[in-house]
Length: 345
Image (cartoon, rainbow, N blue to C red; front, side, top):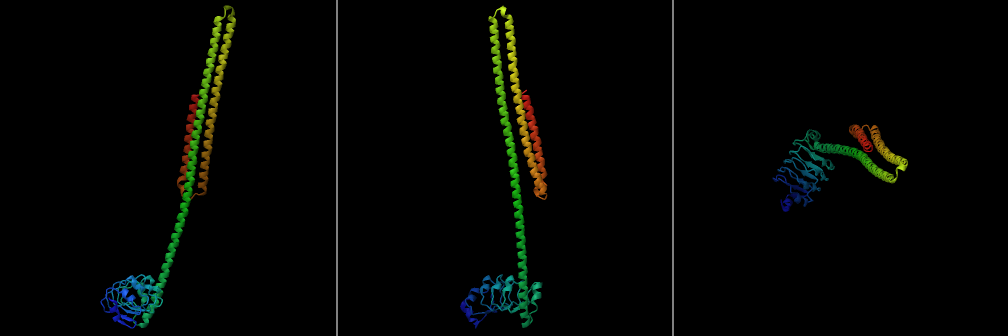
């Protein structure tokens, strides 16, 4: 509707657009006439008020009776100067929450609307001027209480959400700490296993070298003894029959020397085997001490935190798994020990 046509309908501060067969409200044109503080839009076919309608804060009195309104804009409460509002004969079920902000509202008619029970009970009958004034008071009070209650519910939900968030955060933090603890335990167990394996391999290599050196020494001794024996036999060829007794005595002396060398080689081998057994048993002892310590740490932690989900679900499994690891390690070392004994006999 052109602005000029609106001015033709302006009488002082009253703008009468009733019975104009309007389907929409000419908000832009109305905003250009701030002088019109009283607006009559009754007896039209308006089904919805656009959101910009709530910017017409200069309006003091609005007549929207006998239209097809099913709802009011959410920001309807922005019409802070509104004192008189006629909504008779529409299709309203509820009012927007912002309605409680119409603190200057002194007159309200909600007759002939399919209002919800609680709203209808507070609105009353509005059969005369006095009842319409009381309707405005009761509806403002009701909407204000409703807004306060909804705000309290919102705050409780926010608080509950905050508590749940904090609880989840603490639970997640505990799980992270537990994960770090288990990761550290697993790392230390793997490190122990690797160190033990490396230590045993180093000891085996050292013992193997000692054995090889012992065998080479034995061969050298045997060769030396053989050489000595050949020398004795060579001398025996050049001796005469008169020296038979001396040759016999020299031969016995060679045999004693050969026997002494062999006994020396046997002693070296026995000493090497003894050192191998000692080092292997020491490795087994160190491994057992560390793993028993780890079982003790986990047992103490779960004893103190019995309600921890980890202790309920995995504590027993970790202890049993660690015991199985000890048994398996002991069995393997026993096999290794038997192998060493057999190897160096």
